[in-house]
Length: 120
Image (tube, rainbow, N blue to C red):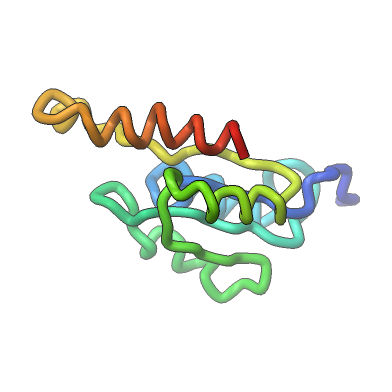
């Protein structure tokens, strides 16, 4: 199938999570938008929700790059944004029971991290 996308380089935040990793696998296989991107960069801090085993099937692809880092790292996010055509933002704290015990990490990641991404 001919590639009809202008998105050749894609940044996926939270790409080692359950949903993000599925997106990465599908993107690299070419199943999502009619073509295979040149590069899929995954940014993930690898907290309780991230697991690189979910990316094993694409880890040897020349189209895949994993960066362990935080969505709150302004310099890193800015650098990665400048290298990509599109961003899929899956980085989030999502376990509600953890938010009840301490909401700080949720605000830092879900609100401030998204703000860092939007500013970049």
